[in-house]
Structure formats: structure tokens, C-alpha cells
Amino acid sequence: MATENAAESARRGPVLAALLGMCLTCGCMDAHLQMGRSNIMYEDLKAAADENGQSVAETIDIMERTIAKDRGEHPPEYKA
Image 1 (cartoon, rainbow, N blue to C red):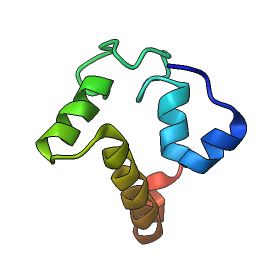
Image 2 (cartoon, helix red, strand yellow):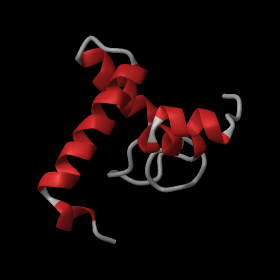
Image 3 (cartoon, rainbow, N blue to C red):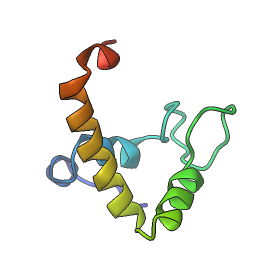
Image 4 (cartoon, rainbow, N blue to C red):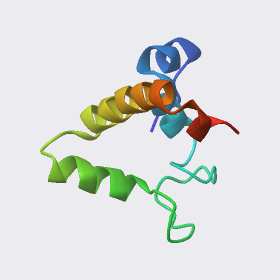
């Protein structure tokens, strides 16, 4: 996947920018590398999208909106 500039990253939102800039959960920079049982790979995201009749981009958009909503409802869950 091509590298995107900061403006494109900002337009896409924080979750999608993170997904495009690094592996999905562990930070290994390989979205397809299995790094334990609980880490999320691209294939997991694609399977969820397929199961719901959506594209990966639509699924990421739903995830971003759900995270934003949940952060407001459950702030302690998102503290470092």
C-alpha cells in the first residue's frame, strides 16, 4: 500500500490512519503477521466486513464512529 501524506491521514480519521500506518494492533508494521491469539490482523477485519456485507473501508468507518461514541460513554476504558 502506498504511503499517504498527513492531510490524507487526517481526512481518513485516527483509526484508519493508524491502520494504514502500522499493523492493526501490535505495531509490528505488518497487517498480515500473526502475533499471538488476540491481535487483530487485516484478514480478521476483512472477514468481519464480508460477514456484514460491507467493504473494509465501510467497516473501518463504523469502527471509528463506534469508538468515538464509546469514548464519550466510557472514558475510563480509553485511559492509558
